[in-house]
Image (cartoon, rainbow, N blue to C red; front, side, top):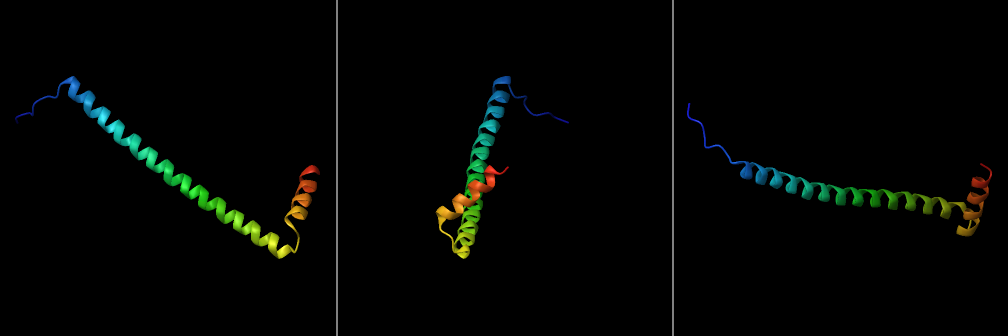
Length: 74
């Protein structure tokens, strides 16, 4: 069975660098998508908190004070 032409060490290095570069681009894209998801999660939590505050008939200042007192008791 005939074998193909062996790659030089320079070609192997270039190939590996190309793979690494592509992976770094992929990692950056994944990090950006992760940040978008984290931001969406944060907004959902804030909206939930806002709904709770609105339904409590308390002002934001009153809720803040209640939470501070609660935290101080721990």
